[in-house]
Image 1: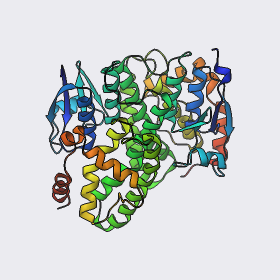
Image 2: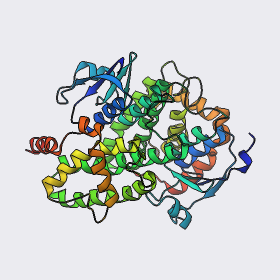
Image 3: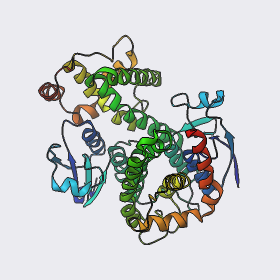
Image 4: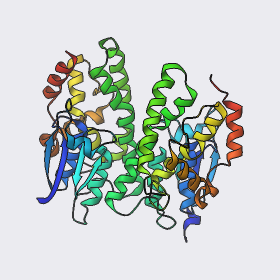
Length: 223
Length: 222
């Protein structure tokens, strides 16, 4: 493991933070997770991310970087080498496709997850349908990106897998609490297969909390 | 630039759209020859819908038959693909991260900026608050810098083209002033440098034409 004085401000349950933890782990970079209480943000967090005051923040070489996908790209570029693991694909077009789908997920799917989790109960049924619909384009994306292999990144997990996979626990918790499957075998068989493959990776076992963690969190927040 | 002539580069866009303009700026910085296919956003072409089925929006870049959508994704692709010409992103990972951070920040503020002028009532109040906070942040970020990218125009500056040209025109047409000189002197200075730069002089739409366009479509909402 490379010891490099890397700190991550975050929590163990934030999928945004987990994108960063998974990426550092893939690169065999040692890091310290400084756990934040999001209800009472530390001075360090407020100082390191004055613009958004949010986690994750990566602190390395005396510099602070925020926004999970910006951090993931930084990690890929900072710790790169011929024999090392690559997070983004090497081909520019494949990179564009990976970035497109990660942006799609953050812009179209994540806001629905937030509304489902923290919004009024009356809107939940409509939002679940919106969530399921939002995931449908990702089925074709998976088929195109994976080219018949296990992950969006091919044989190994990459940028899109990390961006989406960190949210699996939360999505499954929403399925459990609502009793409705948003990732259904019938409509999105490729994605269902990918979810299972992703959850069996070391990265997921280490950094993606089980759905029960999210169920508990949601129950607390919605109480 | 041997070989550039063999590339087939098409841009589905619209001259009055800041998003489309961003891509034109990037292509021009790299000296890439391209064909602009002007789309009528009220009546989208079958080709646009084919190449961007997910969002059905411009801009879409078509390079040797392969489509890419979303302006920031397209610009990174352009920077990755055409290595000669002006670099859009810096070399070093930390500086690249900062460029991407500010590009995203600015991109996220376009809607509130638009709404601070075009919407009404509580929606406008909320949007104005968010816009003023964003402008303060950007004013701060420009301290000691000519451009968001430093000495030269970079990714964040390209993404900020709305602020560079469109926002002021919208303010003028709708008779609402948010970006005042006394509150935001550095941003005003940045706008001057921006529109006068050789990059932007050859890439941005003509102010007078954009003004005419906005005068046709937008009347004050008050």
